[in-house]
Image (cartoon, rainbow, N blue to C red; front, side, top):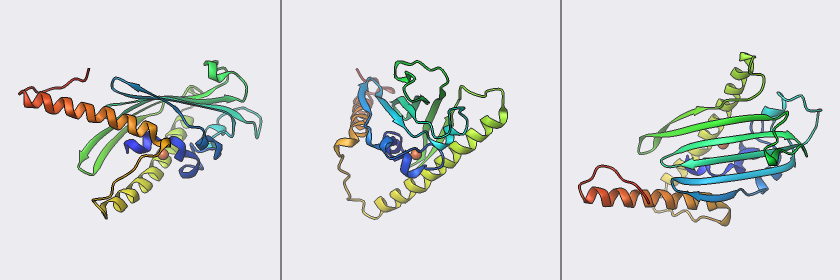
Length: 206
Ligand SMILES: [Fe+2]
Protein backbone atom coordinates (compact mmCIF):
# COMPACT_ATOMS: atom_id res chain seq x y z
CA UNK A 1 0.00 0.00 0.00
CA UNK A 2 2.85 2.34 0.86
CA UNK A 3 4.60 1.66 -2.43
CA UNK A 4 1.35 2.41 -4.25
CA UNK A 5 1.02 5.77 -2.52
CA UNK A 6 4.63 6.66 -3.26
CA UNK A 7 4.31 6.18 -7.01
CA UNK A 8 1.48 8.13 -8.60
CA UNK A 9 2.74 7.41 -12.11
CA UNK A 10 0.10 4.67 -12.05
CA UNK A 11 -2.74 7.20 -12.17
CA UNK A 12 -3.28 7.47 -15.96
CA UNK A 13 -3.17 3.69 -16.36
CA UNK A 14 -5.11 2.41 -13.36
CA UNK A 15 -7.56 5.27 -12.89
CA UNK A 16 -8.48 6.48 -16.41
CA UNK A 17 -12.05 7.53 -15.53
CA UNK A 18 -11.28 9.41 -12.33
CA UNK A 19 -7.94 10.77 -11.09
CA UNK A 20 -6.02 9.62 -14.21
CA UNK A 21 -4.99 11.93 -17.02
CA UNK A 22 -2.70 11.46 -19.99
CA UNK A 23 0.40 9.26 -20.10
CA UNK A 24 2.73 12.28 -20.03
CA UNK A 25 1.65 12.74 -16.42
CA UNK A 26 3.35 9.46 -15.57
CA UNK A 27 6.57 10.43 -17.36
CA UNK A 28 7.25 13.42 -15.09
CA UNK A 29 9.08 12.12 -12.04
CA UNK A 30 8.51 13.86 -8.73
CA UNK A 31 11.24 15.61 -6.82
CA UNK A 32 11.88 13.55 -3.68
CA UNK A 33 13.20 15.01 -0.42
CA UNK A 34 13.77 13.12 2.78
CA UNK A 35 12.15 14.45 5.92
CA UNK A 36 12.72 13.45 9.51
CA UNK A 37 9.65 11.21 9.54
CA UNK A 38 9.29 10.37 5.85
CA UNK A 39 9.53 11.88 2.40
CA UNK A 40 8.19 14.91 0.56
CA UNK A 41 7.20 14.50 -3.09
CA UNK A 42 6.77 17.46 -5.41
CA UNK A 43 5.28 16.82 -8.81
CA UNK A 44 4.43 19.60 -11.22
CA UNK A 45 3.14 18.69 -14.68
CA UNK A 46 2.51 21.66 -16.98
CA UNK A 47 0.27 21.71 -20.02
CA UNK A 48 -1.31 18.30 -19.64
CA UNK A 49 -4.79 16.80 -19.91
CA UNK A 50 -7.01 17.27 -16.88
CA UNK A 51 -8.07 14.18 -14.96
CA UNK A 52 -11.68 13.41 -15.97
CA UNK A 53 -12.79 13.57 -12.40
CA UNK A 54 -11.62 17.18 -11.97
CA UNK A 55 -12.52 18.31 -15.50
CA UNK A 56 -16.22 17.79 -14.98
CA UNK A 57 -16.31 20.27 -12.11
CA UNK A 58 -14.26 23.03 -13.76
CA UNK A 59 -15.61 25.81 -15.95
CA UNK A 60 -12.50 25.71 -18.14
CA UNK A 61 -13.21 25.63 -21.90
CA UNK A 62 -13.89 22.16 -23.31
CA UNK A 63 -10.64 20.42 -24.16
CA UNK A 64 -8.55 23.00 -22.28
CA UNK A 65 -5.18 21.81 -21.07
CA UNK A 66 -4.13 22.32 -17.49
CA UNK A 67 -1.14 22.61 -15.18
CA UNK A 68 -1.32 19.92 -12.56
CA UNK A 69 0.39 19.64 -9.20
CA UNK A 70 0.67 17.04 -6.52
CA UNK A 71 2.67 17.99 -3.43
CA UNK A 72 2.62 15.60 -0.52
CA UNK A 73 4.35 14.34 2.56
CA UNK A 74 4.31 10.63 3.30
CA UNK A 75 5.17 10.05 6.93
CA UNK A 76 5.86 7.16 9.27
CA UNK A 77 3.98 4.95 9.94
CA UNK A 78 1.75 5.49 6.88
CA UNK A 79 0.19 8.93 6.69
CA UNK A 80 -0.20 10.90 3.46
CA UNK A 81 -0.88 14.66 3.53
CA UNK A 82 -1.44 16.09 0.06
CA UNK A 83 -2.04 19.34 -1.76
CA UNK A 84 -3.15 18.50 -5.32
CA UNK A 85 -5.06 20.14 -8.10
CA UNK A 86 -5.02 21.93 -11.42
CA UNK A 87 -5.32 25.38 -12.96
CA UNK A 88 -5.75 26.36 -16.61
CA UNK A 89 -2.40 25.84 -18.38
CA UNK A 90 -0.08 28.81 -17.96
CA UNK A 91 -2.13 30.42 -15.17
CA UNK A 92 0.76 30.37 -12.71
CA UNK A 93 -0.20 27.47 -10.48
CA UNK A 94 3.43 26.52 -9.90
CA UNK A 95 3.90 29.72 -7.94
CA UNK A 96 0.87 28.80 -5.84
CA UNK A 97 -1.23 31.25 -7.81
CA UNK A 98 -4.43 29.34 -7.38
CA UNK A 99 -7.10 31.47 -8.99
CA UNK A 100 -9.80 29.30 -10.57
CA UNK A 101 -8.06 26.18 -9.28
CA UNK A 102 -9.72 22.82 -8.83
CA UNK A 103 -7.85 21.69 -5.74
CA UNK A 104 -7.93 19.06 -3.02
CA UNK A 105 -6.27 18.55 0.35
CA UNK A 106 -6.12 14.80 0.73
CA UNK A 107 -5.31 13.01 3.94
CA UNK A 108 -4.90 9.24 4.06
CA UNK A 109 -3.88 7.03 6.96
CA UNK A 110 -2.98 3.37 6.83
CA UNK A 111 -3.61 1.39 9.99
CA UNK A 112 -2.43 -2.22 9.66
CA UNK A 113 -4.95 -4.80 10.84
CA UNK A 114 -3.14 -8.10 10.29
CA UNK A 115 0.08 -9.28 8.64
CA UNK A 116 -1.52 -8.85 5.22
CA UNK A 117 -4.42 -6.42 5.63
CA UNK A 118 -4.83 -2.80 6.58
CA UNK A 119 -7.51 -0.27 7.33
CA UNK A 120 -7.43 2.69 5.00
CA UNK A 121 -8.83 5.96 6.31
CA UNK A 122 -9.10 9.00 4.10
CA UNK A 123 -10.50 12.47 3.68
CA UNK A 124 -10.49 14.39 0.40
CA UNK A 125 -11.61 17.99 0.97
CA UNK A 126 -12.18 20.19 -2.08
CA UNK A 127 -12.09 23.96 -2.60
CA UNK A 128 -14.85 24.36 -5.21
CA UNK A 129 -18.65 24.10 -5.31
CA UNK A 130 -18.61 23.65 -1.56
CA UNK A 131 -22.22 24.76 -1.32
CA UNK A 132 -23.34 21.73 -3.36
CA UNK A 133 -23.37 18.58 -1.20
CA UNK A 134 -24.10 16.44 -4.26
CA UNK A 135 -20.68 17.45 -5.66
CA UNK A 136 -18.96 16.37 -2.46
CA UNK A 137 -20.83 13.05 -2.63
CA UNK A 138 -19.81 12.60 -6.25
CA UNK A 139 -16.14 13.33 -5.43
CA UNK A 140 -16.31 10.79 -2.63
CA UNK A 141 -17.79 8.18 -4.99
CA UNK A 142 -15.03 8.87 -7.54
CA UNK A 143 -12.30 8.48 -4.96
CA UNK A 144 -13.81 5.24 -3.63
CA UNK A 145 -14.00 3.96 -7.22
CA UNK A 146 -10.29 4.74 -7.72
CA UNK A 147 -9.36 3.11 -4.43
CA UNK A 148 -11.23 -0.04 -5.44
CA UNK A 149 -9.10 -0.11 -8.60
CA UNK A 150 -6.04 0.17 -6.37
CA UNK A 151 -7.37 -2.62 -4.15
CA UNK A 152 -7.78 -4.97 -7.14
CA UNK A 153 -4.25 -4.30 -8.37
CA UNK A 154 -2.59 -4.44 -4.96
CA UNK A 155 -4.42 -7.63 -3.98
CA UNK A 156 -3.32 -9.30 -7.23
CA UNK A 157 0.26 -8.19 -6.67
CA UNK A 158 0.16 -9.53 -3.14
CA UNK A 159 -1.14 -12.89 -4.39
CA UNK A 160 1.67 -13.00 -6.94
CA UNK A 161 4.30 -12.20 -4.34
CA UNK A 162 2.87 -14.82 -1.97
CA UNK A 163 3.59 -17.50 -4.57
CA UNK A 164 7.32 -16.97 -4.07
CA UNK A 165 8.28 -15.88 -0.55
CA UNK A 166 11.95 -15.76 -1.61
CA UNK A 167 11.25 -13.17 -4.30
CA UNK A 168 13.32 -10.02 -3.84
CA UNK A 169 12.08 -6.74 -5.24
CA UNK A 170 14.74 -4.56 -6.86
CA UNK A 171 14.12 -0.81 -6.91
CA UNK A 172 14.70 1.09 -10.16
CA UNK A 173 15.72 4.73 -10.40
CA UNK A 174 12.05 5.72 -10.70
CA UNK A 175 11.48 4.16 -7.28
CA UNK A 176 13.51 6.80 -5.39
CA UNK A 177 10.62 7.72 -3.10
CA UNK A 178 9.98 4.08 -2.22
CA UNK A 179 13.64 3.50 -1.38
CA UNK A 180 13.91 6.68 0.68
CA UNK A 181 10.79 5.94 2.68
CA UNK A 182 11.89 2.36 3.24
CA UNK A 183 15.19 3.73 4.57
CA UNK A 184 13.35 5.95 7.07
CA UNK A 185 11.14 3.04 8.20
CA UNK A 186 14.19 0.83 8.70
CA UNK A 187 15.82 3.54 10.87
CA UNK A 188 12.68 3.74 13.01
CA UNK A 189 12.59 -0.03 13.41
CA UNK A 190 16.27 -0.08 14.42
CA UNK A 191 15.75 2.71 16.95
CA UNK A 192 12.72 0.92 18.37
CA UNK A 193 14.66 -2.33 18.72
CA UNK A 194 17.51 -0.55 20.47
CA UNK A 195 15.09 1.14 22.85
CA UNK A 196 13.33 -2.16 23.55
CA UNK A 197 16.71 -3.71 24.25
CA UNK A 198 17.21 -1.11 26.93
CA UNK A 199 13.79 -1.82 28.43
CA UNK A 200 12.19 1.31 27.00
CA UNK A 201 8.72 1.41 25.51
CA UNK A 202 9.00 4.10 22.84
CA UNK A 203 11.47 5.21 20.18
CA UNK A 204 12.59 8.36 18.45
CA UNK A 205 14.89 8.85 15.50
CA UNK A 206 17.34 11.72 15.55
FE1 LIG B 1 -4.13 4.53 -7.13
